[in-house]
Length: 365
Ligand code: GLY
Image (spheres, rainbow, N blue to C red):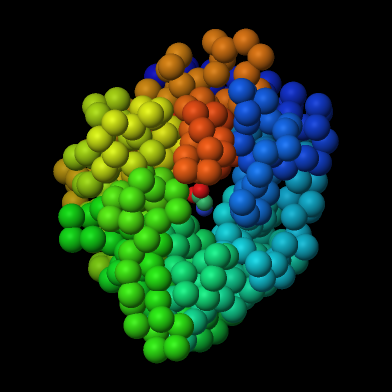
C-alpha cells in the first residue's frame, strides 16, 4: 500500500508536469474525455488554488526545487483573488496554496495574504440569518462554505479580531442547524428570507433533489466541521463532523466511493470519486481530532480503504492512455452536464492530500 501511494505521486508528477508545460498558467476545472483544455462552462471560479496546491503537495513529497518554484509561481498567479468579493471560495484558493507556502517559510508577508483573504470572505456575512452568503444570491447558504470558513477562523486567530470569530462561529452554527439533518445527511443549500433572516427551505444545485443527500456536499461538511472543531474545540462541531462521517460510511458501498447523490436509486455514473477523496482526507483529520481511540482507528482504516480503492486501476488514470487527469470518475455538475465522469481539479487536489496523509500514517506503522 505504501508503495502504491508513492507510485501514485510519481504518476501525479508526470500528469501535472504535462499539464503545466502544455498549457502554462492555465487553470483547468474538469476534463472532457480526459482532456483539460476545452471551452466548457465553469459556472463559478473556485478551483484556481487546486493546481498550485497539488504542486505544493508534490514538492512536499519530492523536495525538488523545480516543483517549489512552480508551486510559488502558481500561488502568485492567484494573489489578487484575496480581495475577490464574487466567490465564497477563498478558503479553497488560499488554504491549498498560500497556507502551505506560509507553513514552510513562516514569512509574515505570506501570512498577510491569507489573513486578507479571510477578512474578504467575512464580508459575505448576512446579519439577518447569520450566515456567509453563497456566490449565487444573498438568500443562499451553501454547505460548501464549511470548507472555506476555516480561513476566517484563522484570520480571527492571527489578528485577535473578535468580530471575525463571531461571524465564522455563527456561520458554522447556522449551517449545522439548517443544512445538517438528524441522520447526518446534508442539504446542499439553504434559502433564507433576506428581510427577516427566517430560514425558508432546503434546496440543491448539484444534488439529485432538494431533500436528497449530495455526496460531495456531505464530504465538505465532514471535513469542514472537523476543521472548525480544530479551531474552536467546541464539541458540537466534532459531533456534527462525526454524524456526517457515520452517514457516509453507512450509505457507501464497501469500496468507499459514493455516487453523486446517495438518494438517487439508480445513479449513473456509479461513482463520484472527488467526494471519496475529500472524505478520505477529512477522515484522516477526524482520526486525529477525536479522543475516542476505537473511533480514531476506524476512521483511519476507512480512510485507508478509500485511498486503496482510488489508487487502484478503476480510478487511477495510469492505465488509461491519453487521459490527462490523475483520478477518474469524478463529477462536477451532473444536472448541467458539466464534467460528468471525468477528472476534476479539486478531486485531484484532495486525492493527493489524502494519499500524502496515507503515506504519513503508513510510515508510522
Ligand atoms: N463548490 C462547488 C462544488 O463542490 O462543486
